[in-house]
Image (cartoon, rainbow, N blue to C red; front, top):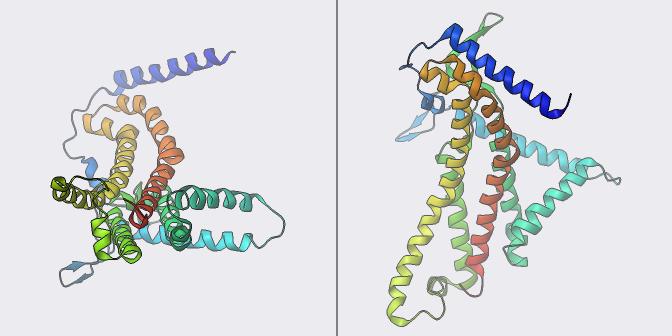
Length: 300
């Protein structure tokens, strides 16, 4: 049988299954109790408040710990594997990642001196965000709103979540980058020359004040753009998977809809894992490198 024939048969089975589900189950009506956004609520597992600061342990903290632990373990494991005199698959992969993080991200956007100074930081950003994003697509027992019983134990149900889908994590990473490159710019040029450098060379005198204000605003806007880009893309990906994997069917009370949207959920899942998780880590690390290079460049 040709590939076209197999595709047509598969499509027919998929469509027939949807029709049978509509006939057999019909519609239960709109579900007013299910709220998809509850999947991203951060209910405290361990209450820990120090004055006005809430340090409670929740699933976001768990995912951060996992991302930090796995990143550190992976780097340690790779360092040990690199001691081998005979090149292996791990060493080949590491060399490709090194070329990406150093030559493409760091060295491609900063001077040699700056890239040597900040490459470890930029590489850590890339690997931490990448690991955090990938962990977010592994189902883990973190849904404390619903539980299941395994061998008599009450265990939270499996759920998808990512620390980078919580705006506070990208904001903190962005603030570290923002203050670091401002510091490097002032260190390299001096405070007043750095501030004057915000005004592009050749700007007419009457416009300098206006341009300076715009440039200052653009510096602060970077905090929003850099953090929200990462947060929004990861959150949107998880929401799409949630809705297509059955959330929309539950909300509308139409079981057949889940059968129809499940293939889309699989496609979105593969796209997020195969492309978006890596792309967002690459974009964040690249923009950080660009900001460092721009802040220390001889001319604006």
